[in-house]
Image 1 (tube, helix red, strand yellow):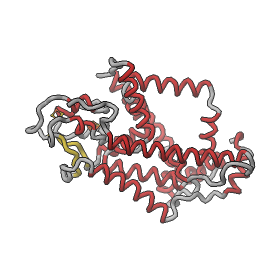
Image 2 (tube, helix red, strand yellow):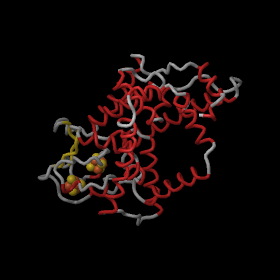
Image 3 (spheres, protein in one colour):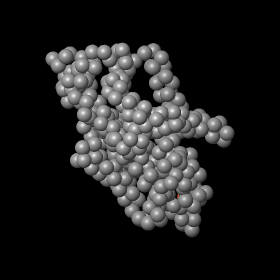
Image 4 (tube, protein in one colour):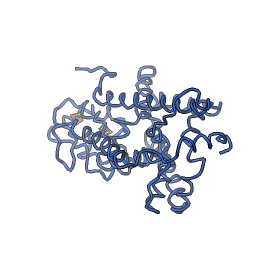
Length: 330
Ligand code: SF4
Ligand code: SF4
């Protein structure tokens, strides 16, 4: 039976939609906080949502460098470092499933990709050496960021960076960048959107350094897709469904860092049990058990950090107010 492309991955898409709506809600709360600062308290809300720090991963990377070197957890953007560590943890345990189940940009990529499927049935397929060369870009970006923070910055320098006025307001600067986006910014985003329509997963596959890091961690993960050769009828449906362009039908276990644990291959497979998702080879018969465990681990890590005091920034509203007067100078 041919299933509807839009409804094909319903459980995963619903989870993705939930996190998109949550991100929009956090963005709305943060915008109201910005209005509060901009109007000197006459409008908006004085409540800054800590979860917005999930969108400043470079600050979290510096926070990680500082924490590992000095033992002091980032108290300027603790929620950013908490979310970053939670993402690293679930990627190590459950492949880079954060990308295919939680990341709002991953969902946006899927929507753009499906839009491309509808508008251009014959989309651009990049394969062979061009694909390998382009895929190396995200690892080059990752090496640049990790190298700059971990090899060119001492722990003390990282700790000092966290205390800079720039870092304290970096979330607000990010919002202001989007509110006052330049022609160059529009051109860059326009290019990325068009390329993501023309080429499957253009951003995730070729450019995202975050995804590259999670893919490398996922490589070490005990969770993997397993193909039972004696059950497989070699129809190739799994290969067509795989957003990572993996040759699932030819593998015994999928070990590639490109595998995001999205389960598209299992959903597409016409033979029950020919493909399974296992953790050290166990828990294979219930395909949604591991994604559920991943989501539970992610949320539990955040709830634990909240309860343990690693969530609320120690930067006071008064300090933010004072620094905000000079935000254009940072
Ligand atoms: S191998 Fe399966 S789970 Fe992994 S990315 Fe491809 S479709 Fe998704
Ligand atoms: S979709 Fe299932 S049966 Fe078809 S090739 Fe892949 S694993 Fe084999």
